[in-house]
Length: 344
Image 1 (cartoon, rainbow, N blue to C red):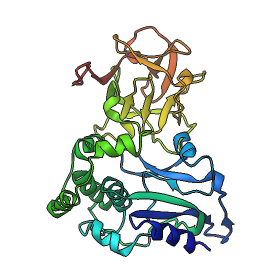
Image 2: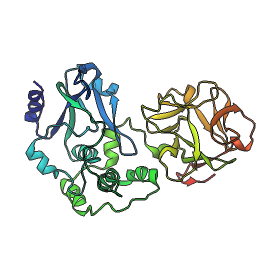
Image 3: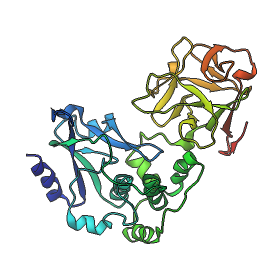
Image 4: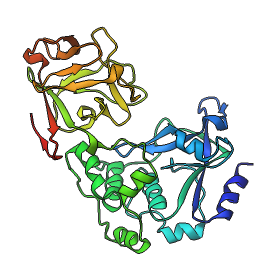
């Protein structure tokens, strides 16, 4: 049964919030795709405040003594399928009544559970099938980005100084997100940990943008064009292109990590030869993903000793022998050793 393993864990400790393994039911055939315990994933998030799945990290496997049937601690949950003690849910403050429809509430509750003394787990012995819709059945209010509004509410209440990493993605255009006074009072009353505690103790694998040595749009000196690409499973392996700079962040927001990765969240720019640069999952091994933003403002690929260059018409990103021409010169905000961002 899928229910008993969830209830058993809550009976042991009411402050444990539990989720089943979510199996996929295909919407066009009702075929059930059963996931085995060894392949269980945990929840994470990126700095666009979007939920994502990750493999169980090695330290969590060791904590569980590599026993696949034991509960798995997860930084976040998908939100649609979970079990929680009614008493504990009330103590935690239930859902934020200022949030609309859905989007962001799963991360908000995940942060709240961990930061306020609870634990979030995925139970490998419980499986629930879910039919994923191709489109939302809800009527969304026109002119209102509901998910963004909800996410700003959670950032204002729970993320402390880390909220700025999210706000940078859309140049601090917060809009009207409503009154969060009562939710901040709830956090004070519950005597919750800081978000810094959450990052360091619950989600230590999270890439923190504050550790980046350059960030923002990467703008060509030759034309008002920027390096542009979505970073998700659907865009891995596809060539990265140039697009007119729009100063809105999004697909033009990039960070240079201390390891030399040009990345956004879990996707890195990767070059293995030829002319095209692609997006590929960050692997932390340097190699094809090691770049240098040099003092002459060129972007150099250490493995191949080539430089990024825009095509003559400015539409494509290519890799060429380093010559220092304008099409190889880039403007990117560097961070000085003091931590101050400066324009180049």
